Structure formats: C-alpha cells, structure tokens
Length: 435
Image 1 (tube, one colour):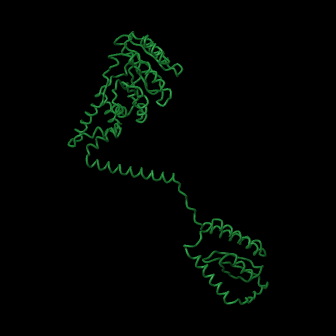
Image 2 (image 1 turned 135 degrees about the vertical axis):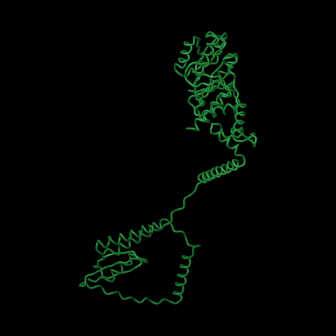
Image 3 (image 1 turned 45 degrees about the vertical axis):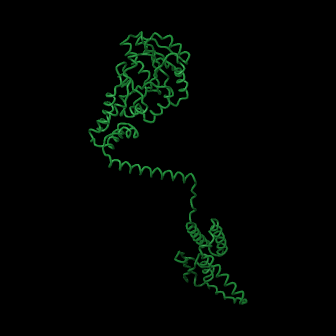
C-alpha cells in the first residue's frame, strides 16, 4: 500500500489531486485543516497501477498585444479588489449561492469516489461553509427616533440626579443645621418643598437644638384648628371624603358628644348615600342608640326638604356617600350639596392619616371643587407618620377640626389642637427612629 500526503488550498483541489495521482481506487485516511488549506492523507494498493500523469498540452501562442492587454486587465482587477475605497460590499446571499455552486461541482467531481469518501468530502465542505458564515459581519442595528429619545431622556434624568446630589452636598456644607432640619421634617412625612419653605427663614447662627425649637414654632404658626366649632356652635355639617375613611363613625361620635351635652332631641342625622344597598343602615343603628332621628335624601330637592323638616334641631350631621375621588358620581354628589343653598352647610373633608401623599393630594384636588371649612383626620392609631396630613393642611391653609384614633363611640374623638398635633407627630417620628 502506498500512502501519500496531499496539500491544497481547499477540499475540491485536494480531492482532484488525489484522484489524479492515485486514481479512483484511492482511500482517504484523514483530512485536516491547516494554515493555508487542507491536508489529506490517502493510500492505494501497490498492485493497482496509478494512472500516468497527464501531459501538459502546449497552449497556442496568442499575439503579444492580446497577452499584454490581458495582463493589464488582470492588474487592474487586483488593484480594484484590494482598494478599500472602491470595493463593493458583499451581498448577504452571495456566500450561500457560491457554496451551492461549489457543492454541486464537488459532487460531480467525486461521483467516482467511494461512498464514505464522498461523505467525508461533504462534511469538510459543510465545515467550511459554517466557518464562512460565522465570518460574515452582523448587520448593524437600526435605532429608531423613539429609542433615541428614550435614551436621551434617561441620560437627562441621570444627569439631573447627579446634579441634585451635588447641590445637596454643597448646601449641607454651607448650612449644615438647615439641612439637618429639612431632613428631619422629610423623615416625619413632610414634603421636601414644604420642608425647605419652613426652614428657609431660620437664622444661620442657631445650633441643632435651638434650630429644632425654631422649626416647631414655625409649624405651630402654620397649623390652624377650628377650636371645636361643630360641638360649640352646631349648624348643618356635611362629612365628605373617599370611601373607607370613617365618615359614618365620625358622625356617630360627634352626635353622641353633642347629645350628651345638649340632649338627643337637638341632634339629627341625614344620609345621602343612595348608591349602596342598605348604606344608611349603619347610620340608622347609631341613631337608635343615641335616640335621634335619621333621614334619607336622594337628591338636592329631598335634601332641602329634609333640612327644612329638621330646622328646629341645633345640629344636623349629613353622611355623604363614600366614593373614590375619581368616581364620576362624585360631581353629582358635590353639586347636590351646592344646590341645597337655602340652609348654609359646613363641609368637612375626612381623610385617613394612613393614606399615601399622592392619594391625599388627589383627594384634596377632587373634593375641593366645593368650598371646604375644615379637615377631620382619622385612623391616627394606625399611622406611622403624620407629616403627610399635617403638610396637606398647611399647604391648603385648611383648619383641622377633630382627630379620631379608634372605633369606640364616642370615646375615640379628640378636638384638634396645634400643640397636640405636633406632639403626636414628633412621638411617631421618635418611635420610627428607634425601631
């Protein structure tokens, strides 16, 4: 057996050389990719005579001018193909078409080889095709105007955040006591804008302790209370607010306190909630316990009639329907309170101290479509901070009337006072810092 080693630039050339040198009975022992091409080891039985190499046929001489023109054209092609400025970009479909043509030509050249040799040749050709496809550059990703705008927006937000941090650091170095007071107010639940507004007039010479005393004085000046006007003066009072804040329970507490002082015959309750089934049943239960009448009014006309019937009562408490501030029926309910203009109605907004800052702001925006006379803060026993509701009252210059901190009727009701409000807010802040 004769073993020969062949080296060529590709598999097609190598197989052709094997066939030409050893004949069609040659057996391919191995094929390996090397630098610059393919290396094939093939063998043939010594008994089988290898075909004689073909004698090169002399090429007919062509005129000198033709050969010179051909050489010049070839040099021009090489120059064009090697120049990066004029080289044409490769099309995506060109590699697959080229390999399909080479595969067909390879099959035609290897038809006379054994089956396993042809399979080996096809496998090598497939590896070359995969390597060529992997070498193709990935298409550039197209960036849309929307994506570019989002990227610019994110960069702007990042820059603003970094600049804000730099400004805060500079302010802390320039006025450390003011910065400390602002941070304390923010931790209590006040907004950053309100904290800066409260601390801005503080004298620079004050220390930490004196600065905090100064801030408490400013808070006390900005907090207004109604001084128990409902239980002192009476009148017609409507409790408004989102669903679930405790309007009905607050009305029962106020009615019970007033009945204990002035008698049950001086109190009356009115329900305007005609949306929920059995909505006035809870209020009716409280009325039976207190011993005062409970009326129902579905619209502005009925409310006006009911208020005329109860004109001899010194305190009439109206329980409005509990609605979300985005409920479309809220406008109708507020319009009912406005149209019942024969009797002046005091309108108090009831808010839960456990609500988020944005929820409180939205409720204030929706319910302030009618003039408000004050606030009632509920669920103080469930909240972890009071800065949110106190800041809302300060920013809208609304007086706070009453506080509720439990479900007991009438015990869990307190008259709002600035000192009491600040003490509660500070106690919650201290408890939160110690936790």
